[in-house]
Image (cartoon, rainbow, N blue to C red):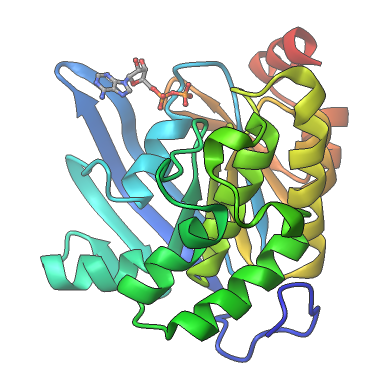
Length: 258
Ligand code: ADP
């Protein structure tokens, strides 16, 4: 399927794609998430907002299996990611792609190779098929003419767009976005957000996004979750959260960042 094709992919799930139940995460004696429950439906774009240190990134890192919960269960597309045997974790993990604050590209590989490497080695795609897909994705992120360059020859914004293409090349069902513009120079932010808006509009991928870019959150989100101290204190449509927040803490947070 072409990445900009708006027809739903028949392999895609409908209904609940991600579920966290009673998830607790502690670092030493600091409880960052305390019996957290939430779910994300397939195809939806959900944004986590809230003050720094409230546990938003920890949630993405748990879903990426970079961290393990101390208690609770995490389910993705009906299969348990935690607790689960290692083999199952590896399978379920393939449904999830992530783009980090720091782009984490392979510095010694060209842009094209950065995108084709995992589909070939992890998914067993042929080199030709992986390259064809990579070319489509490079078009989507506007970097076709840079495919033979190395990351160090690109701006931060271009590198981040490669990282987005690389994540999508694995055909994940959900894309996790962790403050993907916060390491960028201000003039490069808009280009990256435009690419993400385009992906949100033109594909059926589920997005779970941590961002301080409130206009972007307002544009792309179906649902916004406001975090404070590891708890969801308020959730709803962007219209509700940004225009009529119920909670004082949400109002304070928004007036500080908007
Ligand atoms: P947010 O994304 O909302 O800014 P985080 O999820 O990054 O918050 O962090 C939540 C809390 O967990 C913070 O107090 C942070 O210092 C702490 N924390 C995150 N990762 C670690 C870690 N690896 N070791 C110890 N403390 C951590």
